[in-house]
Image (cartoon, rainbow, N blue to C red; front, side, top):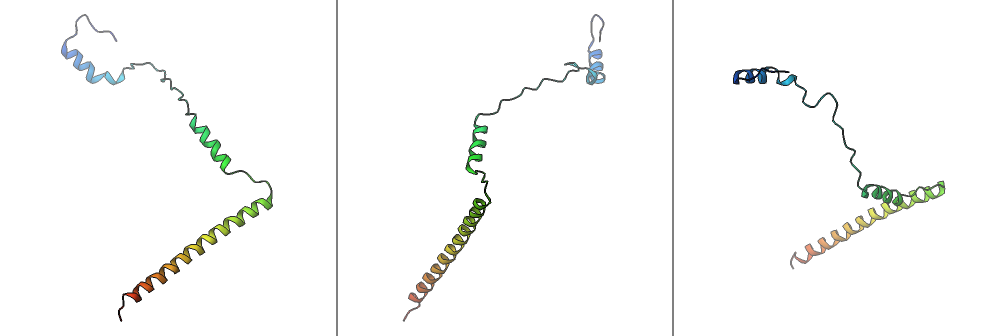
Length: 101
């Protein structure tokens, strides 16, 4: 776009309000995006996760692992139940002590 020799304020204002949006300041090419490097910790974390859960090949090993997990859950449940029962007994004894003669 070519203007005359000397621009007046009115011409600048008219141009800014009417044709400013049509201008391409940076050309038609899209800006280059940089590929950011991944942190070296990320692959290390993924590798350690993979090592924590090794793949078992034999069905017998998988069955044993499932059995261990179920036994672990059952024992945790019975342990919490036993502790709750013991606490209930303690509370009853405490109540009896404070009951009076």
